[in-house]
Length: 384
Image 1 (cartoon, one colour):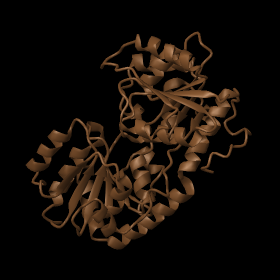
Image 2 (tube, helix red, strand yellow; image 1 turned 90 degrees about the vertical axis):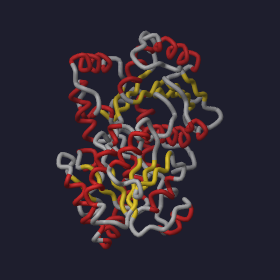
Image 3 (cartoon, one colour; image 1 turned 90 degrees about the horizontal axis):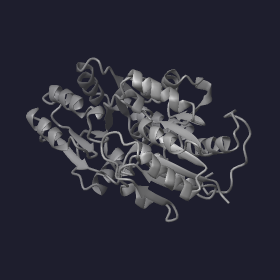
Image 4 (cartoon, one colour; image 1 turned 60 degrees about the horizontal axis):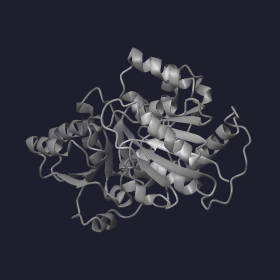
């Protein structure tokens, strides 16, 4: 009988973390059984899961609701779960409460929410308390791992590092005109792009303000906005008030991101709260250069002026000036894109990420504290 792992997350709506969970399940299903519990609702990514993966939705309302832990506990017992794999703080809290008194191991993943949550005394107390019942932590970037160690009191070496990976066969370079045609877009001389949920932390307004400053110096461009969210109406109004209405193309949720990136000359990633951005990895895999906020997690992926570019998020004018600078230097964009693709192929392929999680699961199941110790050889899962 295969070990059963239950993932606990808010939903299966499109997102980078959710994409990673789905990919891991799909590529490890021959070695483990999986279930998924969504605190709120499922989402369109449920359709990508194998038919034998049971998905539960608890319809949790906003705010704290500790009774949810009892519902989670009942599901875990019914599913005969051996590991509950939580993702970010809230699911870690409910998942840990659910397993009290049970011999169910807890893996707690941190994907970037640490940058958003305030460091209150209550938060610090809860994290240290939860750590006492947590079998293993993992983080998607080294900067998150170091921060998590401070908050939990764990030795950073005992927190597994599990960087995100990208499907380099799906996300690969194709001609810009071909991508534009596939997305039914008219050809453009210079196309910028931004991708992510339309929420405050993704910093779309910051990008719009930067473009407003240079639109008269750079008249022939457009910005493709991929993603949906609660700020859509507000951002439409903001774009219009800044005189950008004719430059912005809102695509909504884009199911063809492998075509979205190649339609760009430059991806701008203004988000300030990234753990290890899937958007950046996917764009780089498509050979598209990235201009990103100069924050620790992004520094682990991009090398300035080599395979990508940074702007200083503390100085708004640097983004507009950097965009203008790069639009005048297509040879640098082309070179950075080629080097970006090579880096992804070498360091961040999807199969490496999946192998990291496979090793993590077996380590926890065997209670082996050394993350680098020998483990059972991988079965023929079809992806190695």
